[in-house]
Image (cartoon, rainbow, N blue to C red; front, side, top):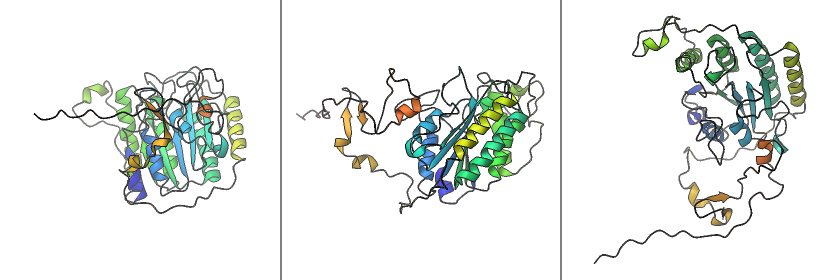
Amino acid sequence: AAAKLNKKQADITINWMGGLHHAKKSEASGFCYTNDIVLAILELLKYHQRVLYVDIDVHHGDGVEEAFYTTDRVMTVSFHKFGEYFPGTGDVQDIGSGKGKYYAVNCPLHDGIDDETYQRIFRAVMEQVMLSYQPSAIVLQCGADSLVGDRLGCFNLSLKGHGKCVEFMKKFDLPLLLLGGGGYTIRNVARCWAYETSIALDVEISNELPYNDYFEYYSSDFKLHIVPSNMINLNTPDHLQKMQSTIFEHLRHLPHAPGVQMQPINDGVIETSADEKIPKSSYRCLSKNSMEGDNEFYEEHSMKSSRNERSHNLNSKNLVPEAKRIRISSPKSPKSP
C-alpha cells in the first residue's frame, strides 16, 4: 500500500488488516506480532521528507511512537484512553526526545467521549499539527475499538463520528494510507471499515445492510449505523482545554518544517540482499539462541523514566553487557557409503 502511494499509483490506499500499532522492534505486544505501520512509514520516507502518523484507536499507539521517538521526519499523533488502561503510555507530556522532541503528540482522553467532543479536540489539534509540521504523506490508523459498544473500548463514538476523522484528513489532499487496528465487537468493526471505505471512495452507501452470508450477525435492526449509548462523558471542557493548550504550546517549539536531502533509491520496495550486508561485528550474542544488534535497547525494570524515552536513550549507558561471541555451524550432511 505504501509503495503504491510512492509510485503515485493511487492517492489513497487501504489495508484494513494492518494497523498493528503495539508491536516493538524486539517484542510482540497487545495482539500485535509485527508493526506493519512502522514498515509502511519507512517505505514512505524513501520518497517523502515528512510523514504524519495519526492514531484514533482507543489504545495509545505506543509501538509507532517508540519507533520514531528521536526523529523529526515522522510526527506521531495519538488520541486514546489514558489512565489505568493498556498500554499505560501516552501522557500529554510524552513529546519525543533528542532530534524528535516535540514530534510526538499525545491526546489522553477519558471514558465516554462522544462524537461532538471528539471532533472538537481532533480538528483543533490536527489543524495545528498540519500547519506546524506540513507533512507530504499521512498514515491514519482507524482502530474501531473507539466505537460505542466495543468489548474492550470505553468511548462513545458512532460510525459517523469515527468516519469524520477520515473525512477531515482526506480533505488535505495528500497521499493517504488508511489502516485498521483494534476492534473487538466484530460486527461493528465490519460496519466501520465498510463505511470508511465508502468515505475514501466518495461513495454514499445505504443504511440498509444488503443480504449476505453473515446477515444474521447484524440483528436486530440490520442497519449500517450504530447508536451512541447514554454513558457519561468524563471529558470535561476544562480537561480538554488544558490538554489542547499544552499541545499547542509544545507545537510552538517546532522550527519551520524540517528539510531533508533525499537520496536516489532503487525502484524495488525491498532489498533482498540487505541482510547479507550487515557486518557480523554489529551483533552481540546474548545467549545461545538469541542475538541483538548494537542499535537495539531493552527495558530494565529498575529504570523509572518513560518506557519510550528509555528505549531511545541512544547516547547514554550501554544497556546490554558484552557477551562472548559464538559461531553456530550448520550440521554436516552424512557421507555417502
